[in-house]
Image 1 (cartoon, rainbow, N blue to C red):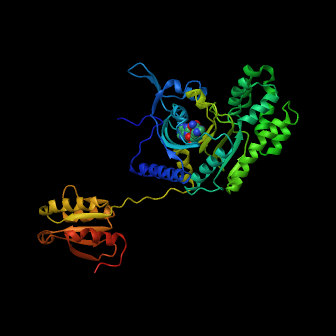
Image 2 (cartoon, rainbow, N blue to C red):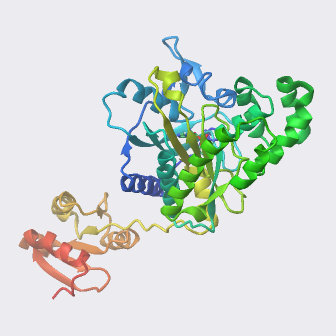
Image 3 (cartoon, helix red, strand yellow):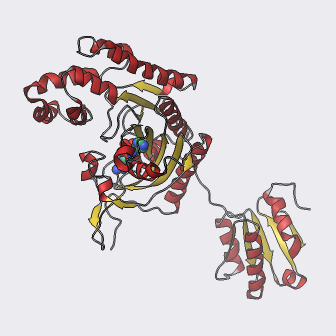
Length: 442
Ligand code: HAM
């Protein structure tokens, strides 16, 4: 029989409830930080991703030629879409632009633990703020979003790094900026691929300097403090003023996070450079403390992307958080809530004659906003009462021949078992009374 395609997921009601839970927390946190929601098309021109996001993302696209002969791709991420949407509207939008989105992304990757071919991603981005204040706001939102699921500083950390520092360091070693992006692609694989493989990747870029360069890169990637960074630069050709000016940005960022009470969530880790080539400055990734999962979220500054995609320059930074690793971690920590889908009211008709009054009561109760269930087939009263039990109905509305003839209904509180016969008109007030948990019906 037909099966869900590899790397895709089906969302039965239980999975849908979980997904809605992530979405509602993400929306709540975004509102908290005053970000506005946006969305874009899931199908985009292939060109939008070519060249801009690095070779890695190009290999991972679901792309094809549509019936109109257009080269198109399912979106693998939101950032290029955001950049192309904001660019032409830049003049009209109030700055800084703080936007978020929640949507499905598609990547043709080898599916494995924490990696799917279709996944949901929460993105939050700030456009129009060049200084580290944007990173403070974004990292705080990222941390608070993870905390809103019950995770704490013992469970995860945000690792902070800086592609500008890396480019400066590589320049000190004689590597020009044009090559630096490719070299950073190798840094991204440190610890994930064997050193001899990485050395081979460096050779076409730097020739027989590869082995020495790799050693220095490994040493730099292990730096976890600004003093360590200074030390690494001491013998390089970089003017110390240039380094100190960049470290001032670091201080501003770290002090901002400290003032927000978030320092304990943040670790300096120059081993992070991110796989996407468009990042230009600070980059960060959130990981579980044990590092037994892939990144929960990642992001950074991308000051050139708007200019590349829309010819309107604007500084920008943001992050994306997926639902897959988040769910794995929440499950492991026992932090997924247990949802009970209970209906507010179950309406029972004792004989087939009550059918139309049952339907009319059901509609009246639904119109005032209650969740209402009843037997679609008008089963036997015994089956209907069983159905009410299974649906978890807190309130029962029972209509038999006597009630029907008198224009009345019997309203029962299924917890206290108290009941009251009321007119059709009084039914809604009586149900309200029970659901509010007011004292027993008399
Ligand atoms: P990314 O690091 O590619 O960044 O993805 C961010 C997060 O999305 C990852 O940390 C992971 O949780 C989730 N994710 C990515 N790929 C998969 C996958 N195949 N299966 C499951 N989850 C996945 C970006 O996408 C950037 N556009 C984020 C950004 C926004 N940067 C600036 N603004």
